[in-house]
Image (cartoon, rainbow, N blue to C red; front, side, top):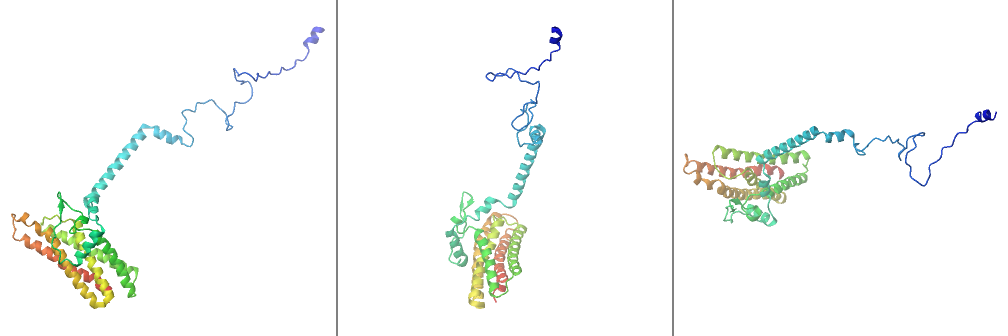
Length: 307
């Protein structure tokens, strides 16, 4: 009986002993419960995250940079872009060199004052030859005879502003009329330069005149146009015609003396060729025609501003 009583005695579940708090655990208890969780409440699956992309970086982007074919394609595209840029810069430099353009704007206040006096009073000037240093012409700030584009550009802008003032005084101002005045003045300059280049080409005149030189000499007329319009606004029609005559004669004298050093000075280079006796006459005709054309343009662009 004692045996049966002992066998039928209910067994109590053993309580799991908690590990000692003082020492480290040799093994993790994985018999029950859930896997450990990290600080962000995600289950730690034990997967090695060393090869995963950084936070905020898309996996496709990391794979793109890791792909050698993608890197080769990017390098090839970059080389094509650089070649295209070089070709564009080369084509632009054929028609407009930045170094040459900087030469025509290398001016200072002293040069501008001397050049304005030379344009309005050229009769007392003696030396018209452009100076060189090691086969390179001196910049305008060092040589008053060198052509520049600063005075023509500023004179063109001043002429447009003065035209707006004159039209406003006469109550004829409108944006369309002012735009027509500016575009007409610009078109006349372009026509004059193109006609000069065509004449030099057809007559096979060898000269060192560049397009910028011709543009500078053609743009100097705006100084006389400003003087003419101012005299017309201040002194009426009589003052306008007196100023027109003075500025036209001064500009013609300036153009003839300046182009003479550029066009007629190269006659000796062609004196041994065929038609040597004809070429100097044609060159003289080009110089005189270019100078004689200036008063016509000045009158055409200023007469409607003074009434």
